[in-house]
Length: 76
Image (cartoon, rainbow, N blue to C red):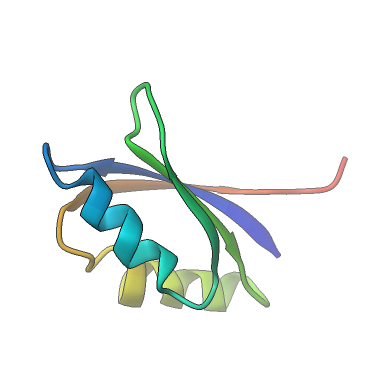
């Protein structure tokens, strides 16, 4: 399954957060953005359980990340 994780980052830490996210196995892309969120990460995992584990165990603990919003992608 695919999801987009929208991330708010502490001022001055965007580049390092993007670098750290790109090292994670299930992150297919991580990019700086303009707007209410600072970074968007494209995630691909097997199921919702793996998504929760990735978010709680690997993404949210990255230093500099203040908030995440996860949007699960569905085929139309």
